[in-house]
Length: 421
Image (cartoon, rainbow, N blue to C red; front, top):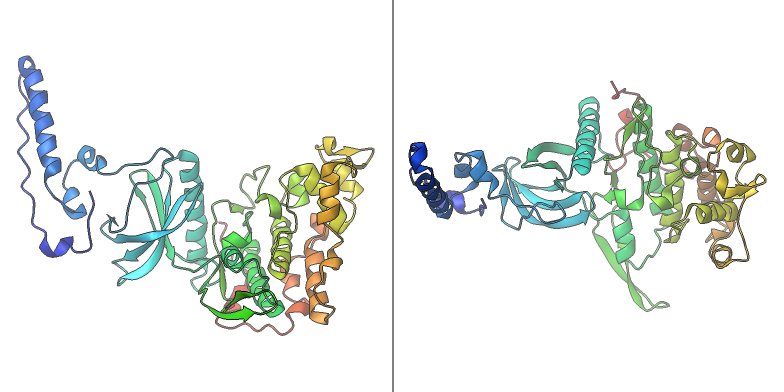
């Protein structure tokens, strides 16, 4: 049943029609007809979610419907759990939808409500995400670099999670700004927060596994506007680069089963592609790809094919180490210890024209730009064991002038509180 925010002011207890007594078996057909009439009359009676509570579960279920894909059908003004009043849709994904809601138990505060599809694999991922977020909240009440979970519940088969309401993702802001890159100072501040946040996860035996610009959200994406005379267009500059890491649906504790393939394609580490096993370093690789994208406005590895992805890596970073080639089960990508790749093919031409050695992407010869690329190179080391760890990344010269303030989190983030138990 649906409810508007004004229903409580005029609401009166509905008078439900009395259910007829169960008849002898000889009158079963008559009884079924009466029961059908009773249900029809009862359902026509206006009622709020509060009164629906008193109906039996079968009658209540009739008021909750899913579409063909398993999304909960809901609209602005609907109220869930006598608490969350839907305002608008913030986004949609394969998992479900995220709605902006008024939380009437938090003083009318606006929150983001993630409503998972009524599909078992997405529900299971939501349960895992809830487990991770509960443990983060439990062990670090001052956490302000990972998104804050407020509440969760099961709504007729839809796992629902309420979060603090954040703003645009760093990807969406980039997209709406015609893919204008962030400034070097903005990249520095976002990078520092990202390293600090993910270091906290790693310290607590957790790998995010799906870091990408879409999963890093601005706390506030308000911006100033200026006109670029040369390009003849309006350009936005975000006022605050305070960010939060979101989406822990694929996060994995060290002791848990590790899926063979993780991460969104463009941010996927070589050890994942080669099925050599993965751990915390795969997050570091993703961060390296993200920082490049912030700096230049486009994706470093724009591909959807494993072999082509490896060819791009070799074009940008040099040859895949022979040890990794010998160890991988994916020998089909190699021939005589080298990547099996035809540079004269159309795909070979595409890689050659769209990829170049990493340092050739520098936009300036200024020291801070070289420091950023030194950091990215350390994060894009092929061998996971040689890849930069995030504790060391925070000491990198690129971050020399970054202080820990209200936007980046308190210093207790640097502690090692185990949330995996």
